[in-house]
Length: 244
Image (cartoon, rainbow, N blue to C red; front, top):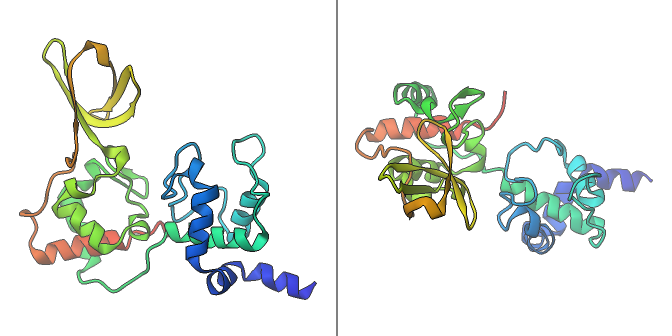
């Protein structure tokens, strides 16, 4: 009995030392990706790349959900996997929402001031403050590396997440509607415009519809920030990990 309790207290350490994250990744892609996406970012199932999961605040809670499912939802229990395999899946999935803390140049306090000066809160939310036109940044430092954050600032079109893809629709009357694609099917498309209003358009009534690959609603700051300022704001963003 004591040995069993000890194993339950050390699930992630066990998975990493005896199972390795590579095995967990293969199991995840085979059994979880059909609902949660190949990268864990969600689909029919929840987005699992968040640093904190509402239903699975602890590793044990995560394991219990993976094993038993959630009653009344499409989340079924993974009856076909052993407990050891499930712990490897838990360890791998946890890794999706975390980047390692590494020393980076820049002063985060100055970066926070720059974040306000540049008007970033006009499109992004941090700890409940700001607008939701762009990605929420409350825990962005736990999900993205400093290199990714730097590229997103100087060349935002190079790293556009799928859910923020830009489209341009031209109505039959010549009016342009440009914004982020919220949803699309064979007959309609929903676009979030810069005023954060969602417009639903019937494709048959459009003069044209262009998917703007490699373009972002975020302005480019390549020439607006000095090298030191870029380091400062990246340092600030990298420190946002959803912690109190």
